[in-house]
Image 1 (cartoon, rainbow, N blue to C red):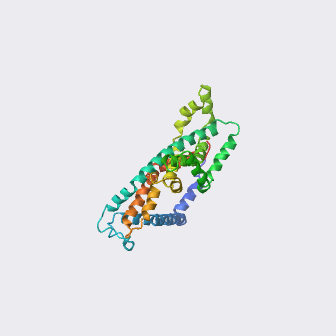
Image 2 (image 1 turned 45 degrees about the vertical axis):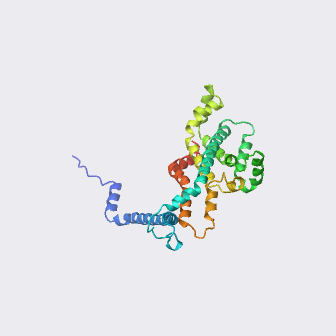
Image 3 (image 1 turned 90 degrees about the horizontal axis):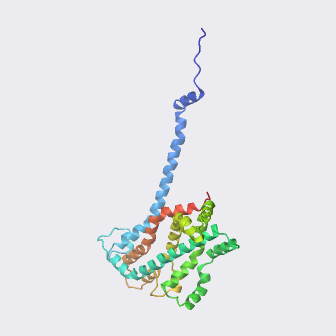
Length: 305
């Protein structure tokens, strides 16, 4: 009977054994190096976070100090006595501006989003002669600075008897926000398969019916992007408000500027810090609540598929 010899161990087993044996130290090197770089990156990120949060810490701490403790020399110290007097004064000073800002930002962002959605739908799915030229003109409107249109816009609102009113400010922001809203929706709607639109047409749906039943239900990410973008832009606006507004229609940004330079004998740092936080809270809350939808909507229109 022929004797069968045992075959040598496969190559991969011998290599694995060598790595577990004498080569173990060499394999552990890259792992340790990767861990070091990960720790360095984490330390750098934490340093940037602390650098960013230092002004926020001063704002929060100073806003809860009584007036006699709110001094630049003790800006880093915690309040000896926690007080809400600064927040109470800030609310009384900014309440009219906050109400005006809510009216302008909420209504203006909703109108801009709806108009941008309709424009983007027509430019992406219902092509017409000269559609590319119209879209180019929309894009051109994005690069016109506020200062270039301020005087003709003021004249137009004066002729319409809307200058110095909240409606006039909303109209100015809506018109100026249509180009960017149209671009966002147009790029998003391009990703919707044309077969869905064709199927709706075959079933007898017209342009508006197709928009309402097919396109609008999948437009939530694009609406999130435009609403956040427009709300932030309108809430933080100062130039339009100063140039086109009036004391009755001034938003919170103008009120904040006026109270910061009130010319009082003693600078009320606690009230000013509370006003700054109060004016920034709405946009901060919007980003915290809808931030993930904002990034998802931006990425949704970045690729076609």
